[in-house]
Image 1 (tube, rainbow, N blue to C red):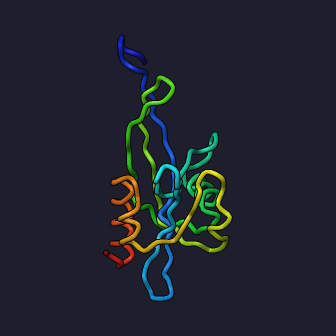
Image 2: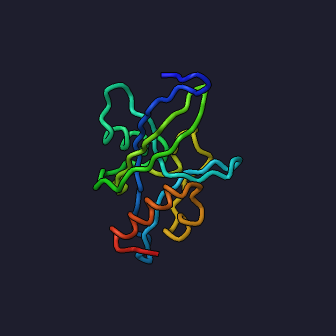
Image 3: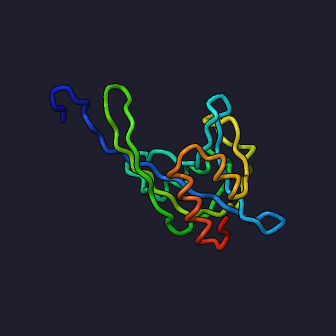
Length: 148
């Protein structure tokens, strides 16, 4: 629906995860995805295929974007934000789950990002570009007993 002088609004949804593991020192590490040219660091996420349940979207997108096979854990929360593209104003909600790697390798990530790396929670909180994603990492840390 368009009101004179205003852009049409569309609601969209995505799904992804906070992928975590413990390193040799017992610290929790999080997998984050980066685009070096943009200085962008984010959690893996993406858009559902037609009819795809959000949990399946989260698993597929994390696998594609990180190169990791993961096991779906508990829901960790969602973030929402607005953006404009192609003359449309979008309201986006992104649902996230805790996820543990069960295989794969970050070296096998897709072309969407320049690098995927494991970082400690304090590093993730420093590097992640968006506050909403930093909040999700804080929530994950609390649930994992690894508050920074």
